[in-house]
Structures are given as C-alpha cells and as structure tokens.
Length: 259
Image (tube, rainbow, N blue to C red):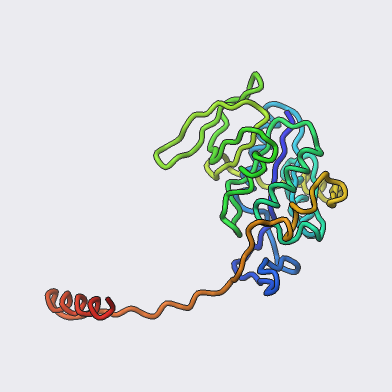
C-alpha cells in the first residue's frame, strides 16, 4: 500500500507577522512546527504501513525552511519526503495550494491513499484536503476517526459527526482528512532521528510539475485577503449592584439606552 501524507508547516506562536503588500503570512525567520492535526495524519500513515506494508511519502509546500517539518516526519517513520518550493507558489490560497499538491501527487503516480489533517491551525478552513481530492478526481472522507479495515481495494472508516459517527465504505484510491481522535502520535526514536538527519529531501519547483502558471501562487488564487487588522480591545463591562429588583431595573435601562 502506497500512502501519501500532505502536511503544512505553521507558526508555533499566534504572534505572526503579515506582509502589508500581499496580506500573507511572513514565514521566514518565524519558528514553525508541523500543523498539529497533520501529526495524526503522519501517525496513521505509519500505522497503516506497519499493518499492511508498502511505502509512505510526505509532501509539503513552502519555503526551504519547511525541510525541517519533512525531516521530523521522517523521524516518525515516513519513508520519503518531497518539498514543493518555488517563489511562484507564494501567496497560494486553498484552491491554488490543493492544485499544486495534487499536481505533485500525480507526478508521484502510484498511490492508494492520501491522508491530511482535518485543517491547518493558521487558516482553519479545512478546504485543502477535499480540494486535493477534487483535483485528483478520487473519493474523499472527512473527519475520519478510525480506519476499521482495508481490503479488496476498499476501505471502511468511521467519520465523526456531531451526533456520533458514520461508517463509510469507499473504493481506493481515496483521500482521508483525520481528526485527533484517530490515534496518539508517537515520539521520534533515536534511530528515526539519525535517519532523518541523513535523509535526502526531494525538492520540486514548478518546472518539475505539470502545472498551469495561471493556477498557482498569488496570481492563481481566486480568493485573496483584502485587508488584515487587529480588532480593537473590548471595553470593560458594567456591574449593576444592589438588590435584585434594583439591579435588574438598572440593567434594563442600560439596554434601552444602547438600543
């Protein structure tokens, strides 16, 4: 079974800087980590490889510093890592990002399963995973909390809902977005860290991919951030003291003044 994991490197802190010209995050020089939900995707890929055999490949799109995230994934048991890095990819929205990642997956060729975290902590859109599935024209199951079985070129999974979960059977290849309930990510082993340190990180630019230049990067993003600003701090509230009827009357009068 060949499994591809798509991950994202995100800022470790909420104190991020914005490029005022492009309204995009400035990632250079900012300490980053693997998107927390993607850690569950990595672990599930490794667990499935351990159970069914095969190969695991991790992909990310970002600046050269994203190699750190790929090496960490290798230390956790992933076999191969690919970095999509090109200034032409900068400023991609979820549509352009999913298109670029799907193009890389097409270049890889043979795969049975693509796994993503349910969403990224810096964007919270949960759109990239499903977008990749659309570009690849494969079925996708979101919010997967358990992979029950894989056999006869089909997978049976539990997809979390607000009321509980649905049991879904899907043909392969397919794409899953996973939630934190699916597993407990392992810590890297010493052997894994040594292997990650020496591992070759494959880097692909737009020239290595079969992409339409009008569909990548900021130019190829149909959605763009027009303005980013910090909301003003909320003013302190009022406390109405006194006996209950008196306090209630004060509250009602205050509401009337506002309305």
